[in-house]
Image 1: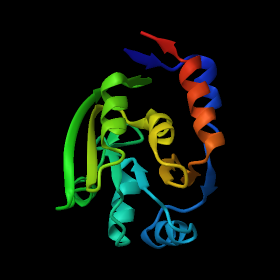
Image 2 (image 1 turned 90 degrees about the horizontal axis):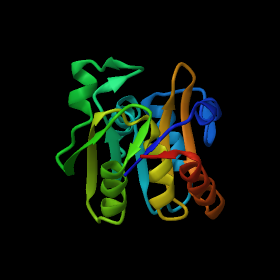
Image 3 (image 1 turned 180 degrees about the vertical axis):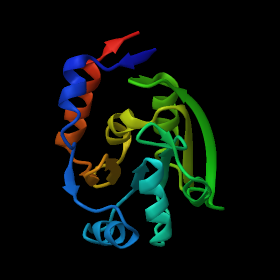
Image 4 (image 1 turned 120 degrees about the horizontal axis):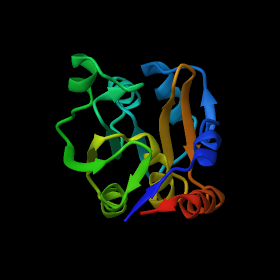
Length: 174
């Protein structure tokens, strides 16, 4: 099964899903993560976000990358910079505008892993924030890039979990 984004939801999701920070640098991401107390999990979605977290010395518990940024291939430094020796690598398929069951299962099955996981998406990872928020433990932090604006920090709360479930229910099931 897959969940396809509708036109109405596409417009709705252009608004940041959490708090927008108008920066996307190593220092900024380190400061954002440190501003939260006792995070059960830190999840990075997107190559540039994962790259800057790792450069800041923070290895996310899970990162979801696709070797692309704003629909263009990332440069070699970023692609190489999202790799880390502690990551268990998983590859999934996920077309643009879709949340595939394969992506959902990879997030769900690895969220409680004690190790660090990198999910490489063959396709597009833009909508991974939805299942990441749904399956992350309450209190976790999901970070993703907002094109040309900065980085969005989503604190996973019971309310945010309900909101993501509602989004999934509004998507077209295929």
